[in-house]
Image (cartoon, rainbow, N blue to C red):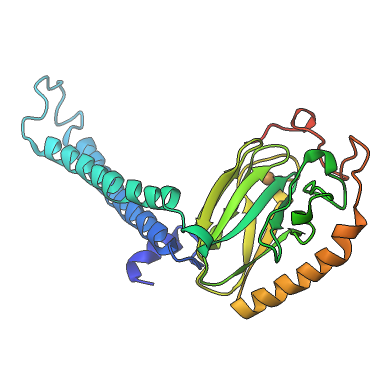
Length: 285
Ligand SMILES: [Cu+2]
């Protein structure tokens, strides 16, 4: 880390970047912080100068002519120029890269992230590489995502809650959706966040470059239990990831596929969860 980046640490920004693009986010924030610091010092000095220079004792009458030199115009123009460079030169290209340029085809790992009050569920396609059909009518305690038990593609699907495993150095596309209110899937160490909105599928992507365990948090105030809506992101080596997949696939094949052949009676909901957005105790967002 360069000494310039210390401003981020000083202001309490996390220094745990573990994604391939994260340093760009950190740099732009770092630059903005230095720019804001310079503006703060500059404007503060100007403010103090004005207080002293135009104090009542020295200048009892109002000056109707104002400033005649062009220095303030030049200063203002420089600030606008720097802001334009920041926006057009850095922020917009970075945004376009993150939002428009998704990793191509099969290179990326696709995971469906389904948020609910107050946890994140993860849906992986299993060994066949195909996601099973999901329908709200199949949802029950043992089938939180409503996987269709009659769909063969869903038999080997892996569903986990709370813990997301991803392999290192491979792009991950997380497709976000929500079962109830608006949540926000926030991975601080990956420098990525995206809103999970009911009725929408919103993809975000990142490439982890360091193995380890980090936090996943909900970044939108989504109800009374929002504070507890946390999870764990585990970035595995490719070998560990394969081992984890195998373990989960065995669990999925052994219990999930066979244990829930029929949908539960309509209206049954997992305990402690709001059955519908209209009945939730607080608005999302
Ligand atoms: Cu939430």
